[in-house]
Image (tube, rainbow, N blue to C red; front, side):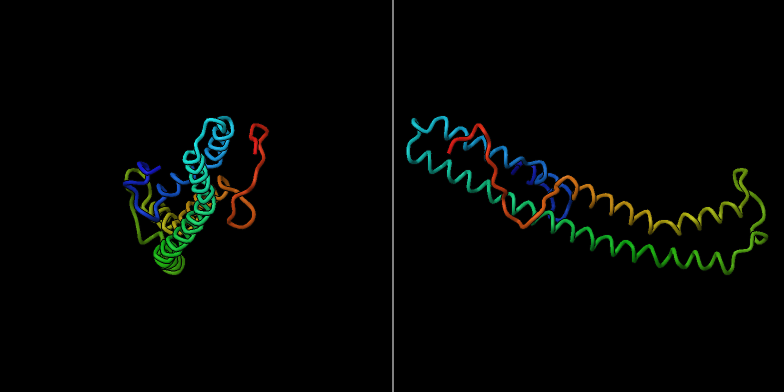
Length: 166
């Protein structure tokens, strides 16, 4: 995990991706299983080390939820800025095309395509840019949300596994 996060910048998807791909609950299970299977051979120091590892890993669940929340907020701020920067020019182009466009004013063709068709196509492309940006951000946020579905407060769920003995 440290190697993955070493060269990443906070607020990027790389940070969230590393956190999402870290299977902390499996590591907690394995630590408990190893400790229980070798309980007779463990010294007090080793047993305390296992307790420390398990405790550290249990903090990972709430931390992951916190980073996910920060990522969502970061992405929504970026979405707001991108929508603002693209919506105003798109609105200007759309209104200008509705009010002022005259196909007769642009005679001729380019690459065998009528210039009025090219102009309307360019204006239409500019008009839908804010919607494409909105769709891209919503898909990214929805993908992260679906991959990390959890209901409830930022606490680690208690689970009982059949292999685990307490």
